[in-house]
Image (cartoon, rainbow, N blue to C red; front, side):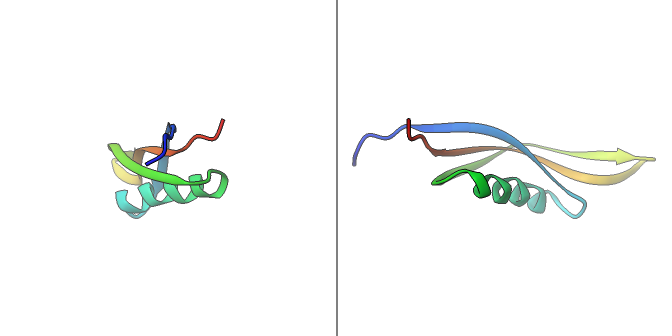
Length: 69
């Protein structure tokens, strides 16, 4: 295996439907501008509330990708 370096960033995805879709939205958006995504780790889940009701699900995600200097 060759030596590699990976960069890790944190993203917050949102969805009015579920945490799973919120996380997928974060990863899908990252994939539009980053190449060679490797790992996505869910680090926090929460909800945005409005008038006592769930307005949006939010997922904080760490995404790693291969770093090419």
